[in-house]
Length: 216
Image 1 (cartoon, helix red, strand yellow):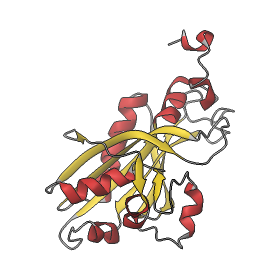
Image 2: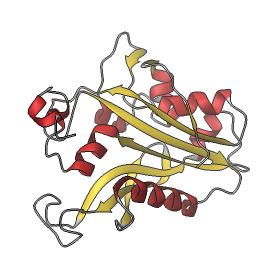
Image 3: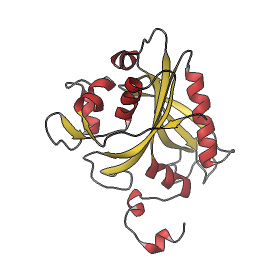
Image 4: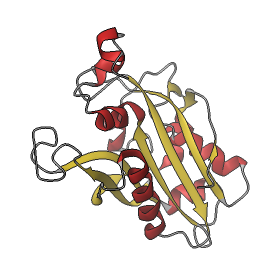
């Protein structure tokens, strides 16, 4: 689809991990991404979104990039959370980009990942660095949208978050929001793998149990 792959530091500054993403020091959204601090201003990144900021500062427009990498949060490992996981984020900044471009891109992505027969839906959500923002669901592959235990009776599985890049984020990276617009999305690789292969617990990907791994 024309995206370049970029990477960035796993040890990041507060400026790139939070401030440039519209999350100042007193913003309550920081509570959702409690992380590991090395100093007051240096931390293990909670998201690969900081790579997007670097890309906006360092590259000429238009920008079409994918940023994969490890991220860290002070979460207790359970069936749906890990303190270290792999995230992939995408960023597009160009003239005339709309929410329709975002929906078309992610609908295509979901069909490539899960199958042409799978449907997608977008639900309004909140992220500090995008506006409007949405969560993206894909129809359950086990019950085909009818409702089952795997999808908790809803017929849908939540897979990623996305939205239009907030004008403040563009401005802080030196991009004119009156001329350019963009969209961003992010997903956890381990979560996508579990949903694709019907794995009930993220921890099973890390335990090294050969009985589990030989299935793949």
